[in-house]
Structures are given as C-alpha cells and as structure tokens.
Image (cartoon, rainbow, N blue to C red):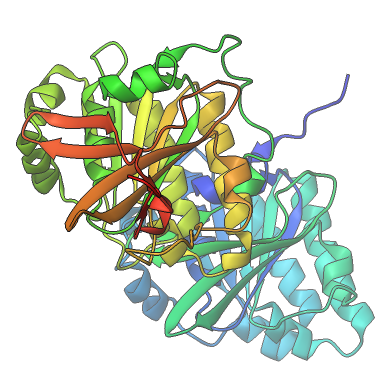
Length: 481
C-alpha cells in the first residue's frame, strides 16, 4: 500500500488544489518573485490560516524593514488578526544577528525559537539577504540544510521567501523540496498575476502557469480548468435520454428533444433570438430538475422582463427552486475563476440544465486565446459528466453572409448539437431562420425553419421551400416559382 504524505493545508483553496492537498509537513519550500508579486501576502495568509487549524507559526525576517510597517500593510487584509501576533504567531527579526554575527548564528537563533514556540510552520523572509552574506555557494547550502534539518525533526514546515528569481540549478533550489514562483505581466493594458510550481519533490502537482489575483481576502489562486479536470469527475449517465428544448416543434424535429447531458451551441447574429430560445430552454425546468442561467449581459431583472415578454414567469420559477440566475459583468475577471464559479453554481443548486449566455464572453476574459479550446473542452466534459444539459449561445459578427465564425478552433468537435440562426430577406421582409446543423448520436429533421417570436413564446414553421441560397441571408426564388 502506498503511504500518503501528511499535508499542511494552506487554506488558499486554489493553491491547495495545485499542491494536491497542501504543503508536505516537514518539507521546505522557496517562494520567489519580484517585489510586489505577493510573496509576503501568501506567506502571512498561510500563517494565519495555519493558526486557525491549530498550528503555531514563527515568522523570521532577515530584512531591515520593521514589523510595524508589515502589520500596517497586513491590516488591510481580512485574514489578519492582530490578537494572534505574539501568541500563536511569533515575529522575530534576525537582521541584526545576520549583520553582526553571520549565518551560523541566525541558524542557532531560529533553532532556539522553533523549540521555544513549538512552531509547526517557519517562514523565513529575506533569503536574498542571507545569500548576500554567504561567502560561497556551500555556505548558503549549509544554512538551508541546517535550518530545514532541525525543522523537519521538529515536524515544522519551512517557507523561504526571496525576491530573486533563482535558477533551477541554484544552490537554494537543489536543497529545498519545492519552489513556487509568483509573477506579474502586462497583457495589453491589463496586469495579470501568475503562479507556477517549478518544483515539487515527492509529490504530485498541477504544473504550468495558473492565474491568481490579490484581493482584500489575500491571494486567490485559480487553477487552469483543463489541468483541474484533465479527467472528468464522473462518467455521466449510461442512458441516452431526452430533455425538452422548451419549443414543442423543435422537440419534434429532434425526435423527442435534445439528448440528455449534451452540449448545444446556438450561433447567430445580434438580435436574432438566441437568448429568447435559451429562455424557452430554461422555462422547461422543474423544481426536481432545476435550471441555471449563467449570463454575462442580461441582469437578473432584465432577464425576468424578457421572459415575461415571452409568457414565462421566471420570478415564480425562482421562488419554487426551479430556476437560479447567476450574472457576472465582463469588465474584469479571470477565465478559470468564472469557469469554476459556473461549476460551483451547478453543484450548489443541483442544476440539470444550464444556459450559458454567451460563450463569447469567456473569450474576452482569456489572456491566452490559444488555450480556449482546451478550456471549453474541460468545461463541457465536466458538465456532461454531471449529467447537465447545456445550451450556450455565440454571437456571429455578420448579420448577413455565408461565413460562420466559431468562438474557438475545433469547437464544433466539442459541442454535441449545433443550431444556426440567421436573418433572411425574402419577399421584402426580414425573417428569422433556424437550422439544425448537427445532433450527435441522433437523427433529426434538417428542414429550414422560420422562427417566430411572440408574447406566447417561440414557434417554428417549415419555410423557404421555394427559395435557394437561403443560408446566405439573400435567397433567390427557385426557377419556375
């Protein structure tokens, strides 16, 4: 039987996910990054969370900055509790000892403090300062080895903080069990913070770059969705059932409804009725199989008004528990945070059908568009694994024309069902067209349909039988008609 290593949870949910449960108890780690990248916030957030779990923390600074200034900055963060300072959390300055007596005496000082305070977590801030005092690379190795050796014997986990970006072959990297790097870069005019686990000895971890941000609650880490759900959490249902699209005629054309647990993408230009079709899809939910509206543009109140104009009472559905509305603006946000929020809402409400309006909003949050395909694949696979039937909308750029633009390369291979909506000019009138382009593992009627929106909802009628090139938006009459 494989022995499971004991973990020290950081209390930062996303970081613990990257570390597969947290730091290894008794191990040593380097947290590195430029000034302002969030190292001190991460370390102190870990310290206060560790105390909440019953641990004791020793924070040793090798910097000339006073602890009073540090406490002033930390006081703006929700996790900081001044009543714990000097009790469960001890702050010790080793700067004077380092300057006057050297690294050996710093080790002696900290060994004594670890024993005296029964510390289970040691944070050493200022590894760069210690490095500058070392005469040879062997001295810094000896400093780290002696500290981590005593700490491990005492069951104490160690974090070394440094503002230097150390190379993988540096003496410090070779001595510790893990290396965490924090960075910040400009993407356009937006500042993006990232975290990377560059080394995790003896432990699995989620590799690669993951976005993070600093809020009033401290450092928030958002693992890449495709790494978090590289394997779906479940295999989904074994039977191919049917769920109503909310439009009777469409259900008949689909042979009884949309396949259960499938992903349906509705694409079309602005104003064509994509959200209205989605509203009908949500209206088919019940309290036993509730729905979730996950939208970016329609506020909850505007969505209720839109539903009312179609003959649906969303407020009553919300009161009965048949519908939940989650709205988030697209001005700012982290792609993986929004994806994880969607999955949390599904889990919280037990949602069986979801409308994502619109899928294109995710692309505006992406700082690296190249990974959108993997992101969407992970998100849809996880929703499918939870037996959630999803309808998502995507806005095409052109109102007329034959070109169809997908939100990400290869998206058509990810979605199960594809519905196309277009404006059509026919007989001096502008009409709405709906066409079923794809339904995975199911037969369907490929007829061209006119979509009619009224205060009684959506209706579909077979039309355009006497015209050609209808999908271009400017059809021509069939010869002889």
